[in-house]
Image 1 (cartoon, rainbow, N blue to C red):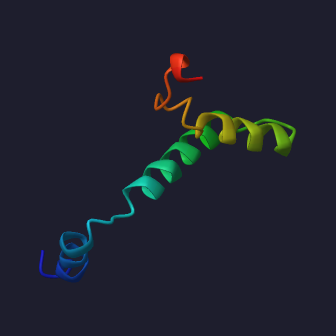
Image 2: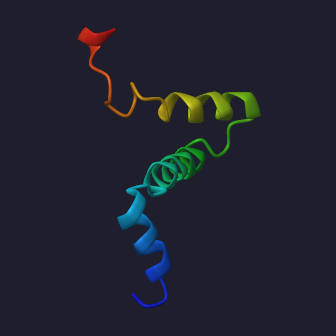
Length: 65
């Protein structure tokens, strides 16, 4: 805790963290592993973008669309 106190204190003061970016990075890495072997780099990029959209992560309901 002592080593991370500056970051912990900044979160307590501001309420901001990098949790969203860490979560998206985790999803991109998982998709990249699943898409390994695609011959076309554009297909792998598109698959990564599809998985990391809000709709794919369950943030939007179909009634809202």
